[in-house]
Image (cartoon, rainbow, N blue to C red):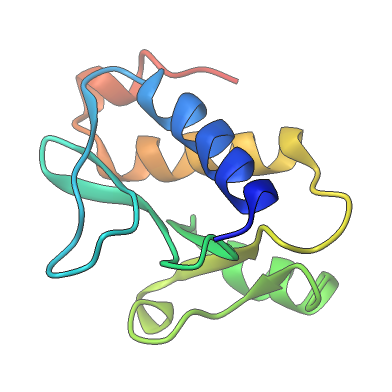
Length: 120
């Protein structure tokens, strides 16, 4: 993994683990970071660090993928359930948008009491 990918993953990790009761635990036999709340996944970084997937709100996947297909994509497997892929290796990551998407994913997965603690 490139140094820039490791730095990007660290930044994603910092955002995710700042949320209430968020933990990092790999998914299945993978070693890539996977972030959870009460053992429910809300963000998963690809093994190579090139992308992260998050749970999207209703219609988010369609809107974002069609508006910027170089940055957003429908991930294999989880895409059919509304999850959204975000390219981390594309130039000029908009960290404000990425943080908003990570927070929204957390709110969609977390219990209501915890979700209410995460504001924009």
